Image (cartoon, rainbow, N blue to C red; front, side):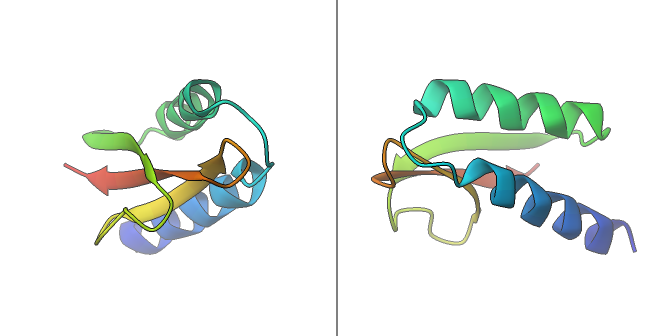
Length: 74
């Protein structure tokens, strides 16, 4: 159940994070703050080139869609 709640939260973040043109550092900080506010612990956020997230969840898009913010637990 906790995993489902986390998944829903990440999709909600992704919806607000898809605003194009936002600088990656700014968007990453906003997502980090929202995750901490929701009590999520032990995670990493990483800015990667579009399509470079691998097995990580993409929670945002920045720099006019050329980069993505990837989330990984642990």
